[in-house]
Image (cartoon, rainbow, N blue to C red; front, side, top):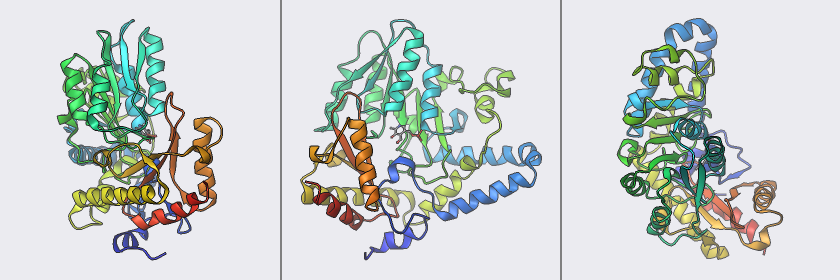
Length: 394
Ligand SMILES: Cc1ncc(COP(=O)(O)O)c(C=O)c1O
């Protein structure tokens, strides 16, 4: 297939299988070779003398990585910590939250299923409960989501866990508006921003959330194992890592930094490679990250239009809620088994035809969602083989 200028230039910068039409950057990201090479250099430095690395080289590298990464998402470094991934970040915040028997945690039924399960786990242990706000599979406008969430707040609601960009349905939520309105009602928000860094121009401190968790490996294209947590000043003495290690012995006030920066021996190179990923991907387009985000959104919107025109697919929301991914309700003839089984079936059937897409179900809904993603290794024409494959499915 002929490839357009940007993708033709950039596909070569990733190690993606050339035989694959790769339309699911969203699930696990994909890291450019240049960033993997940088990570390999760091690993070589570490393995040349692991003791020297931890005692001498690691601290300054980590401090610099924190400043760079925090700056990229509008966080102050003192409230910023690397964690392995967004799931760890959300679990960390949930386990640290003050919850009493009878309290309620609010989530929507578009929230990432693993984080609903984490909320239910914590709620059970505290005698609290989880209220799941129903939102239709196809959203008309952002106001509908705001209204559904706010009208579900009760006097018992203490905490909300909300996706910035929903997973199955790929919708960008007006998170600052929601967090501010919840704060007015005395409800703290934990934002699950797994997809936001690199997709959205982020200013996490301005959102008004108690905690913001995100990923570097998705849209910033860092190696896997790099997520983060930003915590508002009032919560910094409360939020503690899932693993308690040496930092617990520090003075109060120093503990946040000390506890998160060492949680036992692990490979820190994914986190130490975040700056390299910010530079590498931002450097692939004139105009840097704003141009990258704009271009990816334009490609996602174009793929969406082509899928709607060719197959009559129903999108999950309006164009205004699209970031770098587009999702659709999968038609019934494509599906068999439970929604979760049908989603896996859809992914596997297309994988057999050399096409990689996202597909998943969501809590309490019979629907299955097909999702396509755009990054700099993708172009709108890549959706062509998907359209051809799906045409035959009825
Ligand atoms: C909204 C949301 N939260 C959390 C996650 C989990 O990310 P990770 O596996 O990196 O923790 C995802 C992954 O797609 C997601 O979409």
